[in-house]
Length: 415
Image (cartoon, rainbow, N blue to C red):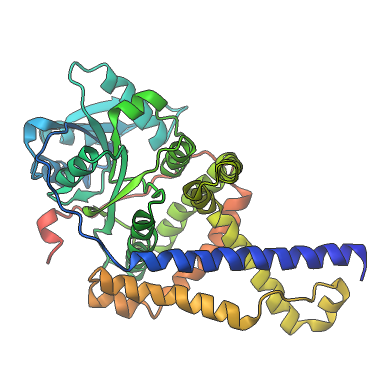
C-alpha cells in the first residue's frame, strides 16, 4: 500500500470511528428525554420582564403577537413589550404603536440582522428609567402560551440565568415542509433539549422563547452578531460556565416555512451561522472540557460539531456506496477497510429514526404528523446539500429574512 493510500485509508477509518461514536453518544443521551419530571410552580410573580420582539417588515403577523403578549397570565404592570422595527419599510411600527406596544425603529444598512438589532435595543433598554429583572426574546411570527412568563419567573426564582422555552409549531398542517419541521422540533424538544436538562447539561438556545437574566446581560454583553446569534450566545455562556436551561412547559409557537425554497434558505442561514460559530468556539470549548473534565462543555462542543458530523456522514456514505458500485477503481486507492460493519449503521439509524415517532407520541402530536413520517426521509436528505453549500459559504454574513404571512391567533391553534 502506498503512503498516500495508507493516509487515505487511515483518515477514512478515523472518520467512521468519529461519526460512529458521536452517533452512538446521541442515541444514548436521547434516552434520557423519555421521562419528564414534573416541574411545579411554587413562586408567585416576582420578576419583571422586558419583552423584545425582533421585527423586519412583519406587518402581516405582528398584531396577533402583540395582542397575545398583552393577555399573558402575568401582572401587566410587571412586563413591557419592546418591538425592534429593524430596517422596516412597511407599516410594522405603526401597527405596533396602535396595538399598544413600544416601537423602536432602527435603520442601519451596515449592521443588518437580528443579532445587531438585539444589541442596539439592549443599549437603549439600559438607558430607560425603568429597569427589569430579565429580558425575554420572541420573533414577530410567534405566539406565546399564556403561562409563559409564569414559567420563566419560576426558573429565575430557582436560580436559572438563561432559559430556553419549548419551541412548538404554529402552522404544522400548511404543507409537508412545515409538518416536517414540526416533526424535527418534536424530536429536538424531547430527545435533545429535555434529555440534556434531565442530565444537567447545557441546553441550546433556539432563537426565540429565550429568557436571560438582566444582570448577566450587563455583565457579559450580548456580543452575538453571527447569522445564528442563538448558537453564538449559547457558546459564550457555556464558555463562562453558565449553562442555559430548559423550560419544557413554557411554549412558544413559531411559524415554519411552507415551501422547500423558503425552508432551504432558512436552514442554509442556520448552517452558515453554525459553521461560523463552530470555527470560533469549538476548539476553546473542547480544550476547556478536557482540561476541566467537564461533560457539559464537551457536550456543547459536540453540538457545535453537528454540521461537520453531517458532512462526514455524507462523505463516508458516498465512499461506501462507490466501493460497492465501482470496486475495481476504489481498489487502486487502497481505501478499502471499513471500521464499523453495515449492521452497526443500520442499528444506529434505526434507533435514531425510531425516536421520531416516540417523541411525537410523548408530546401528543396530531395524527397527521405520523402520516407525514412516510415522506420525512426526503426532508432529511435535503439537509446534505444545504450543509455542503453552507460549508463553502460559511463566511457569508448577509442576513436572509424569512417571510411570514400566517396571522394566526392563539385561540385558533387548538382548532
